[in-house]
Image 1: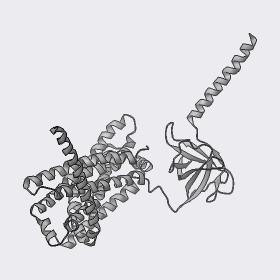
Image 2: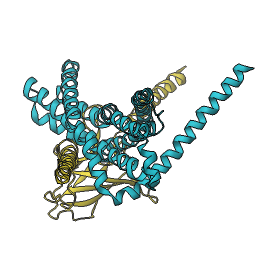
Image 3: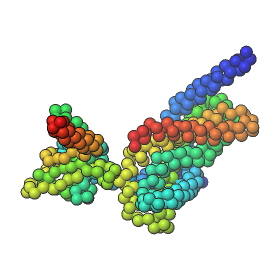
Image 4: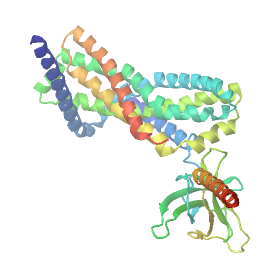
Length: 259
Length: 163
């Protein structure tokens, strides 16, 4: 009987937390227009979230492009199809790796800092102090960060894919000696702007929303203790990563259901 | 760092993103091969378009000269109406013919244009009258099997009559 009650309590807790998160999400969305009026705050956050993530995103993109080109070359050269290397690297980056790896890195690089910042603000009762002064912390603190994450993430994903393709170009054309004309022309004939590049950007925008929302929610709901903030930061990475991977599967199934 | 400095950096960040997007669209995807203004439409009707898809290339002598813009069904004749967008610089005679071909054995299908000998050229919006449908493997096989069966039938009947 007690086990049954425990099961019921856990289920109710789960749904309660879902509802809580949903209400938080809609509050956040409602606060976004107000934060647009103070665009300076958003700009500062784009700098903190976007600009400062640039180095790690570019470095990872280049590395992924390098190894992808190298491994694909080994596999393709046995079929005499080394020229298709550019196409495969391009599709893999633009459709999947660009948005997903950028999302995972973004959760680690920017999400954690957001959670820690908001969590410490809450622990230091700064958010409560703002409310006392009749300033809505959602409009003033959370919404600009949310918006900045939403703007930065697609830009970062685009740059990840672009630098990855350039990395593949360096390895395939400059180092291995794949024909340069074929490398680009096969890519251009088979990669579609709207279907491949466009859907990749849509994906990255969705991941940006997920990452920023999870980070802000975890920070906002943290226990106001050092352990609480540490726990919330960990949960941000775990939950956003899982959400990105799960969402990626759903989006891929929706977007690329036909070959 | 001052407010101005941060704004400049963010501007640079956004600009970098736009440059990356332009690179992806023009250099690493097919936007560049889509001439928007410098093309003219042609229409070709096929009995069967096979696996032809929108944006498939239109080739003449193997050179890509345009793209398939749209594919619809003519409700009266039940033919596939394929709209082609051809480069403005390439003109074809009025009696040119269009065929649906396959690149390689299993490759993508494309529209092949065979130039005719007419002195007048096809104008914008004209219809190509001579067309040849896509080769559908199933119908080829069924035709082959049907012929086989017919042969067997005719050779079996006299044998039965002799008996």
